[in-house]
Amino acid sequence: MTRRLSAAPLSATAALALLAACSSQASPTAGREPTAAPASATASATTYPLTIDNCGTQITFTKAPSRVLLLNGASVAEAESLVALGLSDRVVANSQSYGVSDEPGMVEKVAALPTGGVSLNDNFEVPREQVIDLKPDLVISTWAGGFDDRIGSITRDQLAEAGINSLVTPANCANGATDPRPQDTEAYEKQSVESSYELLMTLGQVFDVQQKAADLVDTGRERVAAAAAKAEGEEPKSVLVVYPGMSTMTTTGAPAVFGGGIYDDIIAKAGGKNAFAGKSNAELAEVNVEALASADVDLLVVGLYQPGEDGPELAEELFAKYPAWKASASKRYVTVSDSPYLGPLNAIAVEKLATALHG
Image (cartoon, rainbow, N blue to C red; front, side, top):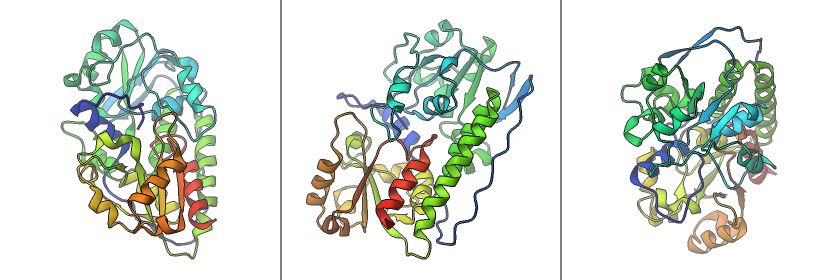
């Protein structure tokens, strides 16, 4: 998920893209078994030409891309992943942004990526004419819908005709696709922290930085396992994740509630259970004040979306509005920003939640 909300309301298409980029539907199985040792990622040098399957499309790279355009898609996963892999110099234009980060320096590093002078259309996407004018050798979209010309971007076929490769974040192949493959639908509905690692490893292979990708994945898995160990033998506590600044994503005006997929997985790994686990995007958008008031909440997770948002102040406002929560009596909350999203920072989210839940 990722772009900064402006003061103006989002268009219906942009709001849908934002919600879809921030959420996936099914809930991974949570368990409190002893934490197993994380598997190690493997790495080897990329041999070109490299052909990979991406959402059912065969893509061939004759060399590592050097002029990358990042479509917006209400995401920052791809920009942060390229930064984490040390590939900032390969970006010719980035349209992704986020105003705050759980990783020190990440906001500045993403902001430092060249924008190529692109101006987004009403759906917050790069128009096809600007895509072609930039002469990229790879265009990356966080979701399949990013290559739907109905929202003003460019199709994968049109890019191929121009000799430009395209890539969709693997876990989002079914998101916005008109006829997704069953395996892509399953991957989208069962997104987890491993989906973030899959993105890193895919980029590592394409850009021939597989060892860097493997190191990031191994470090992430080790940190998640260490945080998860804090919860061993304890009953999962109920966790509510809300982003007050994203209330325009809902149909009720209530704070945006995050659930399903990677969010449930992060909470489970931290020793909790999502108060709105397994809900679809449409169901989450309908969560109203009454549903929030009756939720079982041991820990409140306040998501920060825009610069200047005050986490403690937002938490106190929510505690005052929903006094029946156990978290309101205990004043138990934690703040996050981009670390729960698909991307390279999930270990931070697990660590923060595990510490808040279990010390």
